[in-house]
Amino acid sequence: MSDLLRIAVPNKGQLSEPAIGMLREAGYRQRKSSRDLVMVDPDNETEFFFLRPKDIAVYVGEGILQAGITGRDMLLDSGAVVDEVLALGFGASTFRFAAPGGAGMTVADLAGKRIATSFDGLLRSYLDERGVEARVIHLDGAVESSVKLGVADAVADVVSTGTTLRQAGMETFGEPILRSEAVVIRPAGAAEDPKIDQLLRRLRGVLVARDYVLMDYDVHAERLEEAVALTPGMEGPTVSPLHREGWVAVRSMVPSKDAQRIMDDLWHLGARAILVTDIYACRL
Image (cartoon, rainbow, N blue to C red; front, side, top):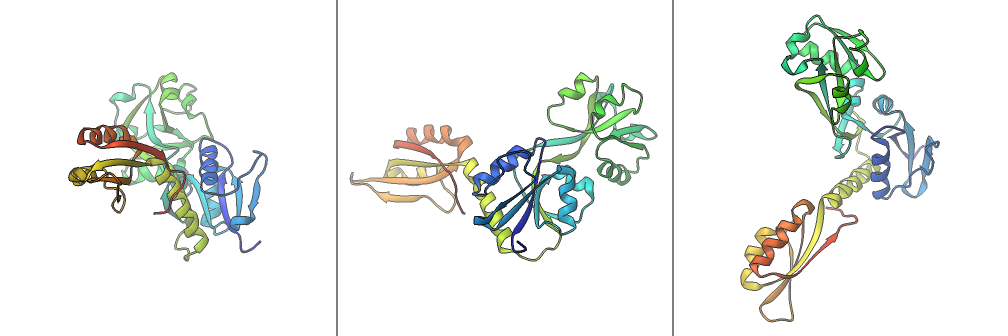
């Protein structure tokens, strides 16, 4: 058991299901029940620990676990000594100030005020860096109620859409304190580990597979260079001669968000038999 790679995964919250889904896409076995707090994947020599998202950075920073998935906001708030090694592209949010009538406020206006937050470590660091003296009030959740109940004058909270804050009669102000998303972390300065390298390769492969598609098309050889300019691929497209004289077949990876536009542009060049295929997994 000591040779297993030990990874922390959020056991609940908005990061949990996307993290579990991404690990499953990367070929790792995942728990079948939310009640399971530990799960071993013997085929990949990995053991998963399902922990509170806010605690994950602490466990990894202490070296108890070799890697973890958590939010950048929770990582920085914890003060744990870890390295962020890969952004995962989900769980995007901003950490922002809000207050009644906040649209006309600046961060300097918070001097001497009471600010409620669930991320007091992160907030104190931000205020100290800017020389703003304010009273930070820690709440475990529902900070948007603190102003109405007279506990605070403003809040600093994680914002996805801002709907909850607006419903509480508050407006965001100032630049975001932090832009957050799910990240992979490991102990700061940890030695190279082949199992960690494999984990990161697999997760990067999932990210690429989600963002790219495989495009095949036929084009006249005289228009090949123009077509390749539209579909340069990762290291250059694959070009093969067709049985039809003067024509070639091209295969290339293209960003999925641009696929329809590229297909239109290729069609106007005279390309035909244009096909798009999803990528299930890859290594680049």
